[in-house]
Image (cartoon, rainbow, N blue to C red; front, side, top):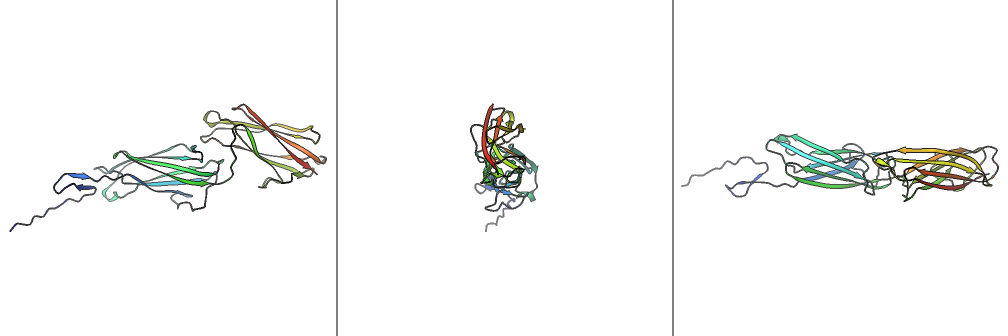
Length: 286
């Protein structure tokens, strides 16, 4: 009778045998990025369907990594990158780089590292779908994985222009009115409010802009009643190229103004692009 032979096999975590008694072959696991989430709070739930961010908000993004290599000594070495772009593909913040270099114990072998990023949306941001492109590299396994996730940003937009342009000029009854007057008529002594946008200017170094505008008012017979040069000047620079410059001001109409149709003239100037443009709009005093 043959004696029974019992083989005691060692516990294996990520090792298989190609054949009984043959050499050990490591299980090849594919690096993956999982659970990408855009939320309104850190580690919060994903933004609900139909909801959107508005310019100036902070969006919170995160994703996890699985199937990374753990060395014999428990070492983990990952490098991640995250890009965020507007609807035209322009980066809104610098590319984010993160490194995870740590050692874990056997009890933590199922740990799924999480990479996070707070995304500060520009205060002037065109509406549309923004895109987060993310990737991670396992520097020990020499593998990479990537993905992308879109999220909506609402709010007001201004149509771009190839040359300096004044858009959306409107007269308002009060500073807080959201809808421009359809019939632009005031009484002598009223305060006239105006809002508009300037676009189509050129950028200097590091997306710098230098835009100014002048304001003038013409009487019903075409004589100039009021003029203010450099009523406002916008000089700034930022990582994200500011897509338009909002303008707003008010004028106090004299109580002695006679009834008639007056003309408002706004002249915008773009220093880097050496451009000038003007727009005229009529209002009535009754």
